[in-house]
Amino acid sequence: KAAFINFISDEEWKSIEPVSSWFGPSSFLMSSMSALFKLSMWIRHGHGYLTENLGIPVWGSYAVFGLATLFLGMVLGLVSEADCDCVT
Image (cartoon, rainbow, N blue to C red; front, side, top):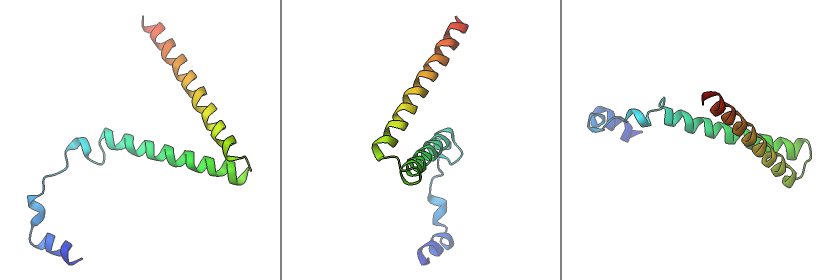
């Protein structure tokens, strides 16, 4: 606490360079990192729900998420292929 008060009162904060806009809290990079973190937390909660509430074994939960990943990849591939066909 004392170090923080000295940091303010001695105006040491003036010598610190500001964070670049690329690494700022509202930048695209940090927003993307936040979205990935939220996704990982959603997956973790989903895994807990499947194993604890529904009683699915751990390997079953992994299989569900693996199949969901494959399905999502196929859907995104089809959408991108359809988009390329429409453009060309």
